Amino acid sequence: MEYTKLILSEYGTYSCREFSNDDIGTLGFFLSSDISFRIGLFRPWAIDDSLGMETSGNTTRLEKENNYIFLSDLYDEDNPPSTLKISREQFVKILDEWDKKIIKADPRPKEVIIKQDGDLFFIETNN
Image 1 (spheres, rainbow, N blue to C red):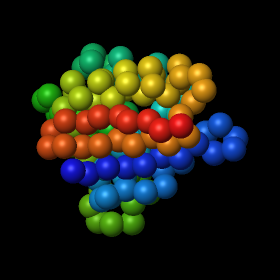
Image 2 (cartoon, rainbow, N blue to C red):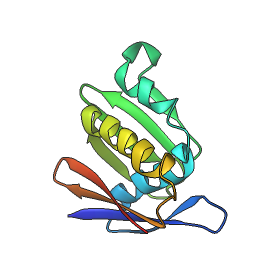
Image 3 (tube, rainbow, N blue to C red):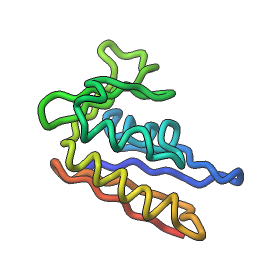
Image 4 (cartoon, rainbow, N blue to C red):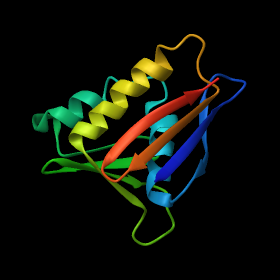
């Protein structure tokens, strides 16, 4: 099982502090840097191909191919950069869980762990 761990800072933002491999780490950086507390742009893009097949955030490039989304680190010095392959369904599920468990949580969890078991992704929180 792969994982990435995000920690809530004293400023109310999350930072990706730990990950089991670079690919899942890309998801952690995407959620903490590109999504943060705004889901609005990426969820519709994932569902609707008329919104384009590629997009990017501050740290992550996203590309759709068939039923998958590929997240690549924009600043990875490896050649090629680390890339996480996730189904569109799981990507939208993670965004929905992030919205419910993190953005709308009161209080916000101090620790967020995203786990990958094969093709399935889960968010766990700890206070």
